[in-house]
Image 1 (tube, rainbow, N blue to C red):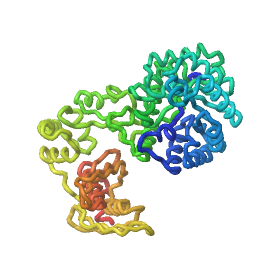
Image 2: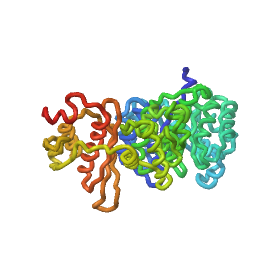
Image 3: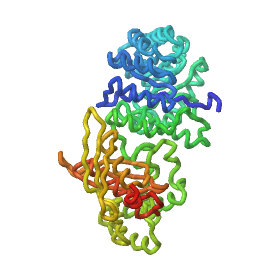
Image 4: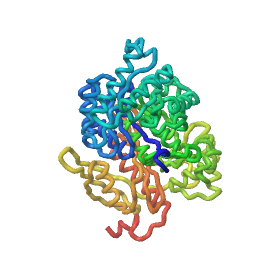
Length: 520
């Protein structure tokens, strides 16, 4: 694709995103997010607002010094001290940008700036020229543009281009615009700003009416070639246009947009989780792209289709965003036989048609009473409808020694299928790792740990911790679960539970399982 077919992604998570109520990031946290954005190949990172605080100046400076790929931008009000502070921070970047903003709407001019239009025009010209004296890459935003008199916006854009602005960002600051209207505004700017060919058009949309992504995509269709976004759509009030939604819309519908971005989409899920963790702003389960339910299917009809061909009900491949689990079938009363069988297959059960028929009936009865069915429920159903999974290996003793100045050491005793006892000691990076090393040494079934999760079953300091693990053995997945007030004990029991399933469901070539006991 040509340059005109490429949409530049300007991420403002570290500036506008940090303006979300309750969010305050320190220098190290900002650096961590900036590194993640760099791995995702974001084109421009707005690292902060240097004049707003000494901490933000320090953060922007640190990011500008470390990152060498993306453009590093800082925000500045249209006053000389802000522009000077911004340059002081971004001057260390390989590709620095100064982003100047100034209101253009009558409501802002009258009640916030308290200045007339000619004076505001002069401020815009002077500060853009001052920024241009520092670096070639200067962006200008007429704040609240969508509630401004259009002719005044056109006039200001013309003036700031003459003063040296190379990117013109059109903000829908309060999320007021409607997509058709916003797209028309971008078209009019291209027609009525005579020197627009000397600058790139960008947009920055807020989500007050839930239209930030729609407005941004409408603008892109009408000639904008830079989009300002935040990871998870965080930001002031209802937030900003969501990076992941913009990027995946363009990636998923090349037939419609005929555009692309430079983003490595496999980094999206990982970066979303990092931003959630560091900002404390949770993503709602039904959030597009990165929400917990984005690739979860509950309807039996949907589950049937997805098990036959993923694309029947998924327009994106979970792997494209780096989703660690991929498609998930949620089992409840709406689920069908195909969804149940797929999950039982994942758990390592091989059932005859008659066994599946019997278990499916019991499954429907339980789902009517309980709601969502988890893996422990399925274990019980299979045990009642077919056979028990025998605990071939049983944890007898687990002792851990760990601390701040030494590797963790685990001593484990396990009862063998023949009733004999074997003991070993192993070290690891932590108590769970050490316990897992010891368990694997004793049982001897080669496996790869795919997933490990911990949940509190009860409340309080003495709460039981439930551990769920998912392991790969010979290309098949087995799930193990256990609960105990000692989380290391429940972790070891969960791994043994998974390996018991593997031992019961897979052939045991020489060197596996019980054979190890006679050949230690």
